[in-house]
Length: 262
Image 1 (cartoon, rainbow, N blue to C red):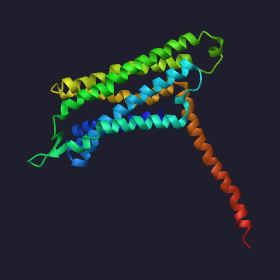
Image 2: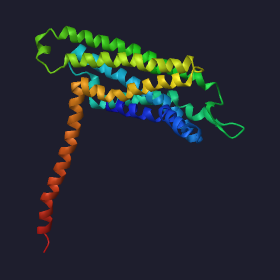
Image 3: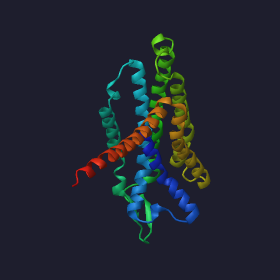
């Protein structure tokens, strides 16, 4: 989930920041320089796709852990990092052509955010609709339905009732995140893919809902997901304890160092 949170934050520095500076300052970073144009164009697709597929992986991991009732191959930290790396590499290769064919100088010296090789917009928006919305949503619904089914079935057994698994919080989190993903992200992607000539105000409004969904992910998990909240506070507590431990070591070793001097 930490990796997913990072990509949710990175998303805010793509089209979102361009919308802001365009309306307030009258320019966009994408048209300031070719490297910026290529980077923002890549980030606008890579970050949301990565976030969506990490959500799919979380749903799959939750489904396997509940359906098998023992630690699966996905539960090991090393394997989790391998899977995350594979997701990143696949999506990087999928979008890497953006660095090659997208953004170029027009004859009049201005920067075009399109491609000199093919019609990038809305062609890649169609691809993004499938990779970022349709496929992840179908998989999340499938896995989350399985999770809720196993939670309902296993909740009736004494073993699960006496365990620390928070059935209600997990179910609520999965239902809310999947529903919000459908409601808040698909309209913007569909709008830019099929209705790119519509009012820019409407498109920017739909885009705002998309970014709000990713911004709300962290507080939503903190409020509804006990395991995420516990891990987050444990991470902060561990860091604080390490700092205190380092301070205590320094206070102990300093007198010893002073005593060795003649």
